[in-house]
Length: 561
Image (cartoon, rainbow, N blue to C red; front, side, top):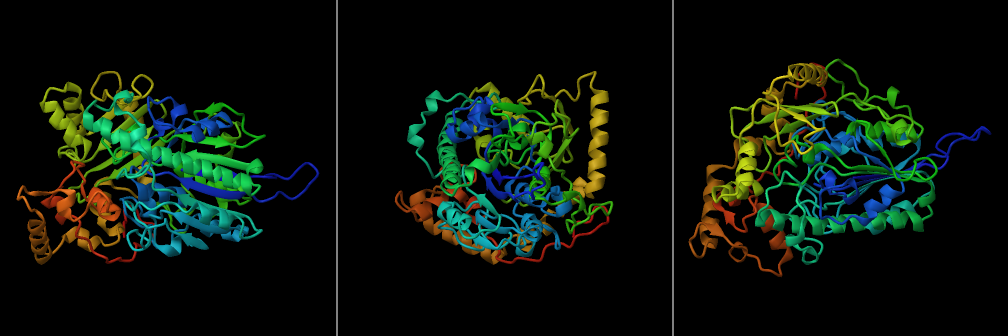
């Protein structure tokens, strides 16, 4: 995600002049591993010239974490300044609790006009009252929590609409730009420009042909995303906004494969972040202070002349406190401090994701060096154990790829406690929770985690089982399609399965290499990325259009609505 703040006259001059309110732009990427910003050191074969330029002209924020592992919670944490369980938006495809406020709610009283351009994936609409809403081109309303663009839509972000909005008035503006890149399916960019044979893989990814093929499409979409960032910067220059603009880039959560998205490992939740502010931030600098996405909204509001410490979120925590979970991190951006948070936290909720019906809750706390992950359903197999690349790694492991077998097994079966020393093991390949000498570390981190859970009103097992209540259409998700619907779907599948092999090719599905809409739908439904649709994948796409109201904010601990 890229966030830009035009901060001319952020503070009054010594002569006593009133400060000029900054313009604000938020550009959020989609399923992008932080280490794939090339200047962060990788290892990666991604090309990010615009982001690299941004870093050379500003500060790398190397201690930035998101608190969720999937898109909707991550975005809504950014926009509300609240952790996911407290806000209600903690599973994917979720909506915040009734009464919760977000970025435009606070900026309008400060004199701002606001716009959302691109992917929404938040809701309900009344909690996100943008003045202008332009969904990505070629998308349709109705798939997201607010009735707008959803998680897997793949339209193009309308940069012309962004430029028109920038120039449409004289009052300060806030534009929230949300691209779909590099979220799968990987259908954009020029993959032929990336040779899989030359890729340098990060240490946690087993080297298989399917892994390299996935990276090829992913890198091509990173090209598209990076070009969009460059175009956004050029628009600011054309409209005369660039010279007095603070630019902050954050990468959202990680890519859709094992140990990244849907997990609390660093490829999933350790974001890349860059800040550039000419004349205020030292070019080429770096700051390792721990910060979280929840800190970004208070930072924006502070820069805009507001007082975030006095603002009411509309949604109390378990102690009845109405303020933000985050704090303004302006001093970090200005280089005034290299310490901000003592701990960062995260949560992962699996119920309702990609047809998952088995609860699997995890929580995380990290002090910068040590990370503790608690798996509350450790006796069960992880629901995505054979999803996408995980399935390929298991198969390759059976053929003799030892590391693929090891990673597939680690991904599928996890102990209750995982402890990683990020100083010596940044890719989290060695769990040291059961090794001697770390009891004090574990005890201290568990105490911090429990304090956070209580403040959030989060009982992880209970929160997991109530996840459906926070997802539009949850009755359909909980109960599943009717027997009649399943029977009809099976008949459709059998009619399409011309060769009777129990799976559908793209052609059998009803598409062709030139039918982009059918190809896109086919790739979305192909959740294990094997190039065919199984009967289970075909049936799993049955969905309800029902959109129940979100849960009401509650003070009592553990209430999920």
